[in-house]
Image (cartoon, rainbow, N blue to C red; front, side):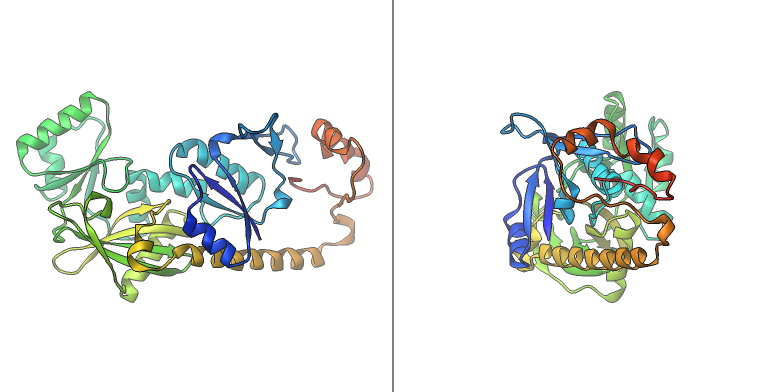
Length: 354
């Protein structure tokens, strides 16, 4: 397979190692160096172009040259998600993640809503644009201490603990004045530990317990430590369902257990970090690459089956070979130019010639 790596920064060595070990090739494109084009044609012909600084003019990326896309979008997710949506929905390139899923996972409130809607246990949560009834809101989540979170943020950033009424009122008022949205969650006594699980398809490929270092946050990036753990089948299913709830076949899922051993889903991460690889020795990208290969195999089988069952009168035209000026002509007129002629013979046009 030839993989389109859609990554904000340089490709991860662990990802490249997994791809090359499986015999696959790859091409790296940064989202902010791509142009997307939406055609006016009813038959498709949407495009995407590379606008890399080392090119003298934009270069069209042809989807027939790629088998799948792997997304590792960090900075600039809103634009990056638009690029991913174009690649997957408009140009029919497979990805183990959806643009909607990445945007959902970035927003802690949307994530919590999706998880709860699918029947997964999450901490008590309140979200208010103008939190003028602080006592009411705090009581709804079980009182103090409580957790306050910005809607976005990773590696433990944008998370604080509210210990008393003065701190709570001051924090809520300050964030409101700055027009910064904040959600409040019930505090789970877990001895500053949580679990990060990497989900690929219907499998948890590796899990790590993280412990905080003099901090209620257990994130490794906040000075915590980690160790490889084996999850129970119940917790594995919770993590798998959490990823699916966010429309992600590949994700990092964080769960936390209270004093009674009850599991709560805390967050879902669409761009999980690689500290877990260093700590556990398990390169989760190997599982991701294998999963993509299996999905592409299923897609090819479905395409073959569909092609065999298409009646002759509704066959799809395929044009092979290249004529001088062909690409310029098609970019200008598109397949719609031929539609009146071909329709007389009962021949349908391709739905999206990318």
